[in-house]
Length: 409
Ligand SMILES: [Zn+2]
Image (cartoon, rainbow, N blue to C red; front, side, top):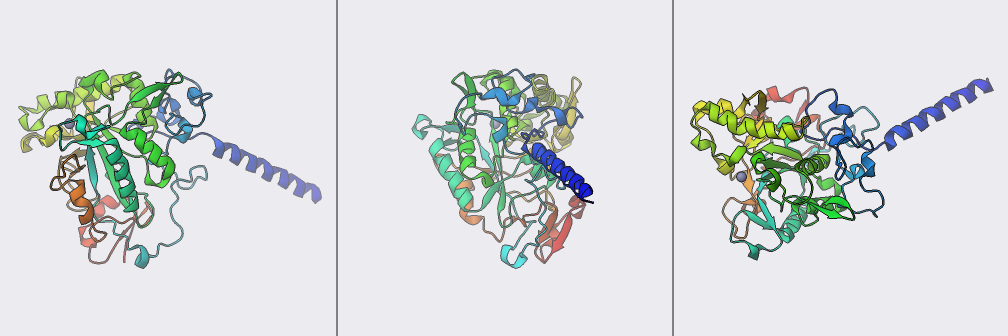
């Protein structure tokens, strides 16, 4: 009998040891934008492999000796991309469906309320450097903005999770999406430090990474809309374009289509022209990173194509490269409805522009005091449940529930 117990104990210990090894593995899950091919699940080379050829066998060799630097690109500090959700496995504790029922009367979730999608353009050290009054943010203002948003219960989600309505911010928090147009250096660039490439701390992403160190629950999310014809002018700085994009994606950030040549779609002549402007941009991305695809478009100048050509903006093909835009982002001036709302139009999704040197009507500074908890999306903390207060459930597009539980309270 004792022998039998001993054997059982040994088996248990072995199982425990195995579990510990598995859970100590670095996070090698898929970054955003990666094509769902069988190889991508086991392809850690798209993680932050800065300064290393993409074939490097050991992604942890990126920063061999340096002391922990929150801005250094290390795969282990990369946040979890939220798309590969396997709630039942103990090795992925970041998305755990709540088994404890949410106290609806205290949290007052409203998962049909509005979600702000913020649009950023340029970032500079000192606003006096620029004559632009509307589209440039200083690093210090951006830092202060993050503090404000955090204190006001906003939490970042990815564009992909906005599209899929897979919203996993904690109960009582308001999801928010960050979008960045034009791939400017102030948004993100790499610099050399001790022989390695690191994210410039004086960039929006650098500031977000430092903020994320302090407040991991704020989220390190955002989508960067790129004009691939700009080549090395995109995120201008050190490193190749491949290294820059891999670093961004490795951090769990996303890239989106902003059209070849920053084309104004309101001037579209025909479908072929639209296919070229979108497909060429997609094609160049896939030449650099064959496993990566855009899935969202930000309209340059906010200019939309005439109604008759709208299909070609949503999806198409150019020289054998297919493209699809699951969301088409306007310049806009309003918070967006969530993708499960009856009024949601993926062909024209509203954004709010960040405040520049001069505050203008309908920018983020205008909206912040107006985005009351009554009108905004308040999370129930459970991505698999959609909780809506009684009386607002009529706004739900139930086709978009896709297996999620609906709670009307
Ligand atoms: Zn633009």
